[in-house]
Amino acid sequence: MTQDGTAPANSADHPWPVRTVAVKVAQWIDRLGSVWVEGQITQMSPRPGARTAFLVLRDPSADMSLSVTCDPELLRRSPVPLQEGSRVVVYGKLSFFVGRGTISLRAIEIRPVGVGELLARIERLKALLDAEGLFDPRRKRPIPFLPATVGLITGRGSAAEHDVVTVARNRWPAVRFEIRNTAVQGPTAVPQIVRALAELDGDGAVEVIVLARGGGSVEDLLPFSDEALCRAISAAGTPIVSAIGHEPDTPISDLVADLRAATPTDAAKRIVPDAAAELAGVHDMRVRAAAALRGWVERETRALAQLRSRPALADPLRDIERRAEDVERLRTTARRCAERLVDGEATATRHLREKLVAVGPAATLARGYAVVQRVAGKERHVVRTVGDAPAGSQLRVRVADGAVTAAALGAESLGKSVVAQALPDNQKQTGRNRR
Image 1 (tube, helix red, strand yellow):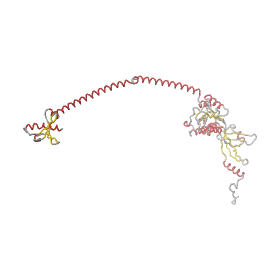
Image 2 (image 1 turned 180 degrees about the horizontal axis):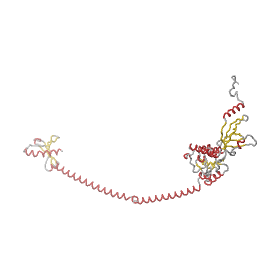
Image 3 (image 1 turned 90 degrees about the horizontal axis):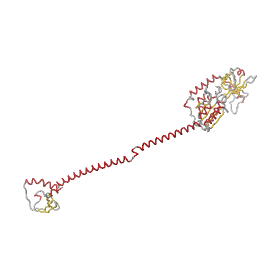
Image 4 (image 1 turned 90 degrees about the vertical axis):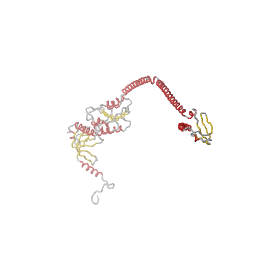
């Protein structure tokens, strides 16, 4: 005790004895009070003459259990005979036995859960999972056409295992199985199935998982409507086929699974194809492909024959020859047009040349006229009037066939009328000589 009268704090230097810890645990548990607990009876040991009956209550969805003690009269007065596997609701108070260090539930009331109540709970769970979208068809994963390895979860030595393996191998002999044998009913079914499902889902070689059971009563099929199992099926990455084989009552696992099969045999038929049917289909497709190919070749042959029969391909030079005739005709026409144009222009040129010759100085000189030029050194000046050639001037007289050198001896005047008439002609002739 400390100076103020309180107990020292718990530490390595001041540890609590076992009795203190046991008492404290008993006090803490006692504060919990009475509770209602639901579970499945896995063990019952009512001893004749004993004042206490011992039971083990197990959680159907987890590997957990709780010890229960009760008055044997509670078991005998039950309206429904209780046995191992029965679902019950227990009302009692937890007790911690300090002597043995164990916890036990002292049952005051035990109520068996009837089939009606179980079905009602299944319906409530179904509505909950449906609201969460676990039944949505868009969540369904497609089943592979030809899985190399099939995972199978079923009971050991069960008819369901025999049906799935035999039918699948008869349809496709090369198929391989990874089989996990688990309990398919009772309190241990859900934990074992969930573990097997996780193991197969983690195996990369497994392409589809079949959960199979050969039917049973409503109570026997309760594990397949368990929430933990349904959520494990929904969370799996591998497609899952549910083949419970119970038509009247559909377990929730059928709704959550990616594919529901009516029976294990139906599941085997739906996970692997029939080799004989596939070979027949391949043969049929080969026949159809060959017929289609022959038809295509015949159509193309006819099309080629039609193309070859066309004039452009039957006589390819025909158009060239026709075009050659057109070209020759156009060449002849162009040559004729060019010749006419040249002849016309030649005639016009000849006429112009004749006109030019007729009005040119050479023609004038040929008619008897002459051009008189006064020579002054190297310069020459055309004599137009008698004043341009005074006496003694050196003259050069040009005639039609040459020129004559002369000298001016004098001048002789003509009448004004004669000069006026002749002057324009002389001026015109002089202008032409200059040009």
